[in-house]
Image (cartoon, rainbow, N blue to C red; front, top):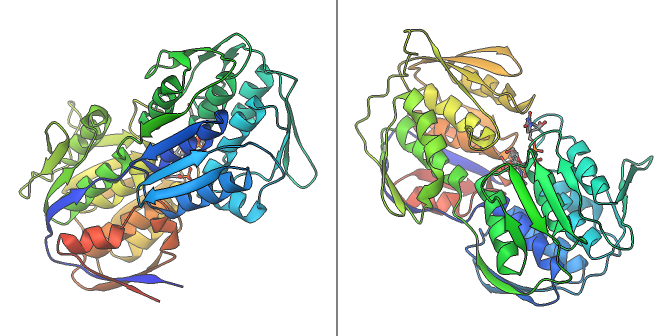
Length: 427
Ligand SMILES: CC(=O)N[C@H]1[C@@H](OP(=O)(O)OP(=O)(O)OC[C@H]2O[C@@H](n3ccc(=O)[nH]c3=O)[C@H](O)[C@@H]2O)O[C@H](CO)[C@@H](O)[C@@H]1O
Ligand SMILES: C=C(OP(=O)(O)O)C(=O)O
């Protein structure tokens, strides 16, 4: 098993090219099943999750051509003959094939999707949305999902019980080929959901309300090919801002879609971290205040997550480790996932002053001097948080289960080395 060996303690400096958004690439790969015409996807991150999604779509009859490391051409000829359960189990995004397959009239029988083990990851919202369009949704004794479409999906007025990202994406893709109009209230509207909607409109869909929680989708008889660019990854952007802040580094992040930075900026303000936003780049200066902001009434502040445009859940682990290197106190409140914060035990072992109040809340008191440690990544974002922690120590750390990091971060090692990081991969 590969591991990272990281020697921390020195400030980093340089430029990083931000990659395409993992959580946009996954639904866009699935959306190519909605047409028989050629779909070209650009700025696709070269990561493990994408490779798995491409293997899965090949099993569904798609001809996949890797044009270069970040460009793929997909030609679909949809036929559902089952999917490799191990691959389905390895990515959350595998659930995103069901919407397009159902829209193309295929009955879908798949195991539940995998992805990070960070709490209850219910599929009820997918079932609620898909059944409104006429799909019969059941779960068999093995836990497999049995999704049976009618002759044609029927547009419907849908109110989601929660603004689930992948459920919204699945329902949008299904509704795109349904008969008549669909509306989705309480839709998720993350940058990746918006990017998928933009791609579908390029393919001939008529989706209104993009970026809001109310979508109107006119179902079409057929959709067409497109040449679509995946939006840049605001999670990767936030991760490198956290890294710069925690290690006193000066970084310029390039190829950033700066439309999606305001929620991040509000979060980093609470840590006493500022950054400058240019047209398509972000500059994080070296000398920062690094004092966690109190509320206006002078008491300890809190940072909590919420569906977009709230602070993204996927950045809370990064914010937690970054907060250990700031002065003051902050309550981190992870409202969306029940088990994501358990990784703080590793930070505590490294010397961080963190009180895990319960599975959802941690109080971080800084600034702590972090000690070197041997670490094991439990999930993609905790793993990246550990990379930041390791770079903030002044000794040698190892991190195991780096597949759990590299599934979401393109060329992480190369990017860190290019800014002066002392990091090696060892087999
Ligand atoms: C492949 C992919 O795109 N994965 C992302 C997707 O997962 P995914 O689509 O699986 O996540 P969901 O949006 O369904 O839900 C995430 C969690 O938030 C809770 N929840 C959700 C909505 C809400 O209004 N209230 C609430 O409490 C859910 O119960 C669940 O525990 O969205 C998550 C939330 O941004 C991200 O962490 C994942 O990286
Ligand atoms: C939780 C994440 O991903 P997934 O939904 O694929 O597990 C993530 O990207 O942080």
